[in-house]
Length: 236
Image (cartoon, rainbow, N blue to C red; front, side):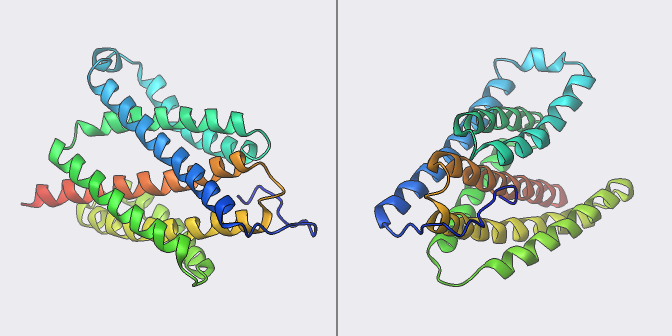
């Protein structure tokens, strides 16, 4: 969103409830579709294409792990300029993350994955509803969570070399808290942007951009919860 220019003095606010609800439905619809695509891709990777994946070159694996960063940037820049291209990139991103989830699935049980997914859906849904309908300004929350995320990333990089399992467990808990807060913030932010600037940019493009942010919030909550449940069982 930081790549979009919403500073035009000619902005026209969107107050029609049906228009706002239509935008929110489209945004969460795209986000839900991305999650579904990831789930289907993960399932197919673990079943139909399992043998082919096992034979993939390591270099190709690394490329697949890096590509999502470029796609996320591409969606951020292109979504409001070319909604179709943004949507296509979002679906490609969902496929790649689904492939990566399949690689991780081998380290966890089916029960752990199911519990993490259902817990993530519950947490995400509650915070998305809160962020969408609360009258409280969540801008400060977004700033705090963003700063905390930077600190967490630095700490996690350091722990790659230290390999401290207790620290990893704590970092996972902090990660859930951060992305839980960011979910509420992003939900409110996207509604506010549509209310204030919805007439300036294509609704589909703005919905794609919002769905990207919420999709990333959801999968990060899921991944951190998966680590928590996995490490929690290892301790028992």
